[in-house]
Length: 378
Image (cartoon, rainbow, N blue to C red):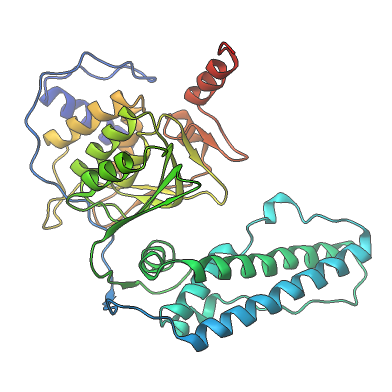
């Protein structure tokens, strides 16, 4: 769909809701419209799975698999130190460059998850193998050895991280980061029990929210925040779900003055929750944001002039987000597809969706925040 068609549809949608045509960005918050009844529940489904694997409700890791992964992590940690020292011995340089800090992290994550989730055969193609060259005394080879060292250490760190994850979190992470990614098949895993769950980390200051945005999602976030008064930040990663639940959760997050960040890819309705943070950060290795059209419960796309889009527009204005950018991204992909935006992209800061990206852009909100912090009276 062309930008012109999308733009015309946006104007028509707003006009149909008795709203003025939005001005050229940045959009100034208009006078709030009269209260409208809530739209019918609308679902933004997670991308359709090619297959679903049932998991037992009481999961116990295979001790042999765990032992094998721990041994492999120890071996690669030791090899990483050895090849790094070999590279330094060739040319004296001690750093591979920040561009290689997270090298092979996605592959390592999916490989370890696959071993633990009974998908060893599926993840075999993403395993990284290593054949260090200790003989060639060139700067190029020295650089290759340092990069290889980063990858080896990343494997050891990722293995430890995944082994410490609860089983349900591994399932969510697999569905978000591995199924249908890196050339792997869309072999999603069904999560048993409640599909949203929450972990309080960082000395009680961060609420890590896992799972999809299903019925009751907002109330669970509200309850978790009220039960943990030290929370300052909400960390997100989700395949999406119900728009109304996302916006209700977002309203509460903004009311409490909390920050948001991404620990994983944030698709469908998830960006609406992310946009509620008073500061919205994305750390390397940069989770993506994904947008698509809203659909009904049977998977049919909602018309562009449906009142739900007006509710989203008003929500975005209240959050000081560029609404036309978000709606254009949503309308550019059908419900079963996704318009992904690289988490490192400057356009996210330009639209004020992210306020700060590690080693990347900052938005006007973050700049204003820094100014206020500098001008605070001691």
